[in-house]
Image 1: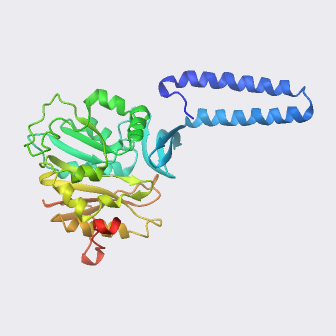
Image 2 (image 1 turned 90 degrees about the vertical axis):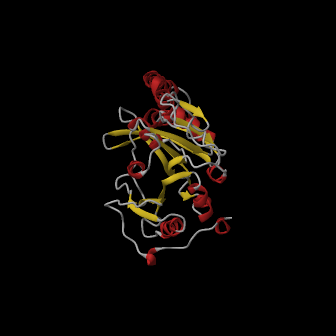
Length: 339
């Protein structure tokens, strides 16, 4: 079930008012029929009114994805109206619907800006590989806030990208910054053994890559990214094939010297279980010289604690980094553990 998007919302509301008037008139007419028939038709009319009210209030869209059906709908949080993408019972992304539509709603998306604080640049340009598209919340923000950033977004499910383009303002983003189906010019030209040239300032800054993120990482390539951000989930579960030491080494092969890798890691059991965070820190410590953890929890909208784990061979000095020692480290994850 779907309804017209926001561009046609006024028409949809007018149609809804007319439809409800007709339903009420229909209910009065059925009152003149025999009692069993009238009762049945009144129930049908009431159900239709309820469904229509839901449509008007939440404007739901059902999206068929690789992980089953996802739901896109609007909701109110305080005075803010926002559209959310929900899959397998959890929020995957959200967007404001007003002038802040390119601002991240969730704290962990805003936290990815920390990566740009410490990432190197290539002749004034910064290339980022974003693993996981969803509603493209952070790429939208990064591309509209930082003119020197180009982002390749790897999303395995084309249905999710179509939903993001239709309902999360990614088509508008593409008009603003330019888009290519595949890797951005400049960042992608370093793939396959040739040195990455300086990017043309007029070139598209958004690359849409429909692929499995692990396959992209395992692809041999000349280092060309200044940063890689990993925000890949299947429902509430992290994709562990991207968290192994083999995957992290493959990711590092795509980073320039001093490049930065960051992952969004979520706790379990209402914040009491951080075992996966401990494993991620231990695994990254096998590949990078410096690993730091910062809180990215959203007290208002988050059900669990979010942490941003940032790693690099260069020294990182986040003032709000959460200290940890060797006893905190969990297990180093390997491909054989998640096969």
